[in-house]
Length: 376
Image (cartoon, rainbow, N blue to C red; front, side):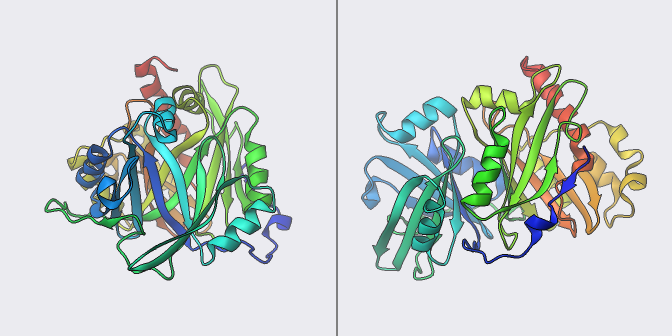
């Protein structure tokens, strides 16, 4: 089956009952938040933003919020063993817990989604301090992942109540990362359509692109994917599930080591991918590499591009084109010891797609890494 664009039925404009302003932050549960914050600052160019912990009245955990342009990460660690955060880390390793979405009305977002079948995680709560108020609510999604709805239009503090501004002498320069382009979830066998329906029915998303096992396959493994987008296109969640192949796919490997469904990777946008990736590599970030033969007929495949080919080849940056332009992308190796979470760096030059033309080269690169780990 060829790549399938959303049907006319799905593209009919309807009133958006869940208007989203974008990704507010991504929160990771990690074994050591202090060290994780240092890693993301040093390697990825984030700046210190806010801190929460015993000093701010929170006794069971610590959280460090870091920011780069419109991109905010929160790293959270439990202080005691007997709580949900510790259990999450024990089961999954370091990973994404919350995908927080900014809304104008967090109460209404919760009511709209729960009445459509969303499972409650957090009823609307009002957090206040001298800087104003933040209203939060949330629903559960695949695995142990949660969507929080964040309303902060009446707040002027560094991050949110419960946090204090975190100032440090060590603040490395930015690497040019700007915001979350999309966030990909891995779900279990025969679970993709269930979660597609969840995003359609509960959150009002639409399926804008679908790939089957013929689109995304190599000699050894395959997967299927559907891209879900909210009404204004600010939030996109591709969903992957394994497909039958001769050997274990990257999604199966993830599910085995994460012990369940969860966020596979977060795609981070930049306006200059050559500069960003060069800086990230110099700071120790490791990327997947494709064979140099990938670049031999690149211009014939994708047409004229603005960038010089040699830096792209040297850095291993991939290029793909759709009807509206082209994109450049590259994927890090997993950033944890478990082969689970990784990051994509992406620059869009008009393209709205997700790099279908790069799937084969990319997944063969992933399989080489799987083979080294003995997990293929």
